[in-house]
Amino acid sequence: DVGLSERNLMGEGNDLTLHGVLSGRSSRLNLKYTEPYFLDRDISAGFDLFHSASDNQDTSSFSTKQTGGVLRANYPFTEELRQSWSYTIKKVRIEDVSTSASQLVQDAAGNELVSMLTHGETYDKRDSVTSPTDGYILGMTNSFAGIGGTKRFFRNKISAQKYIPIYDQVVLSFGGGIGHILGIGEEVGLFDRFFLGGDDLRGFSSRGVGPRDSSTKDALGGEWIYHGSTQVNFPLGLPDELGLSGKLFTDFGSTGQLNSSTTSVNDTSSLRLSIGTGLDWSSPFGPIGIDFGFPLVKESFDQTETIRVNFGTRF
Image 1 (cartoon, rainbow, N blue to C red):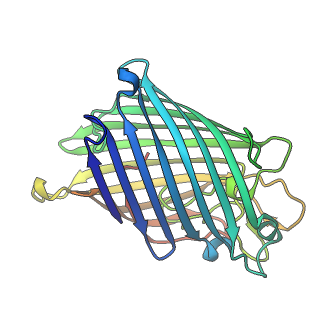
Image 2 (tube, rainbow, N blue to C red; image 1 turned 30 degrees about the vertical axis):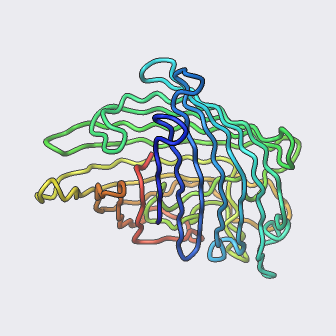
């Protein structure tokens, strides 16, 4: 994970960031520019340029490439409440599709152009952005794709997280999110559906939960999703400067609804549940966590994983 940040370009407070991620199964390059006081007003505005490639052969028998850009702006209504707008245009290519892949995956192969407008609201009462111990945050996004391009859908997401100090450096947190996507005059595409697992449902692999081709075992995604988590963070008795803490958690969630008659699909709305423990490290590079998750409630066609490393604050 390689990042480069340069500040005070083209004016005091401006931010230009080049961020790259390279791993065995994915890569991403993102150039981001932000003007915190656009037009000398309390408006943060800027743009992103990005390219990414992901190998989904283990879960869905295809690879993806995305190239595009984002224009974005956000501004406060109050000290806690901010509104955001963004316009995204990107080319999405599904390629390297296996000849034995699900028919739904084979049908999705090729290029799509996504032109999407997104509106968001965030109400943040946390005492810290990176290491909260008290307060809560609420978020909502609404996205409409269909201003040109080849995709037509309307997607909504709502999320929330609450933090409660229990004792000295012991913090209880709970929250989660729900989402739904609706195709406009067409079925929702493979790449646009919700996939669950990994950071949002520890103990299950990425794309490990949800509709799956009963023959090929390809993950196909769902048109609705919900997930939640309860977690306790606690000190380990080590020096504070090390930035290490322990955690216990339980995660739950599900995703489903796949409108298709072209293939046989395992699609159930049943609850999945996991428990686990792990470590968090407030590193010089940002928050890093390692989780050990163990599914308690699952379906026979789900895919699981025991160990997961994540970067950044979960929300």
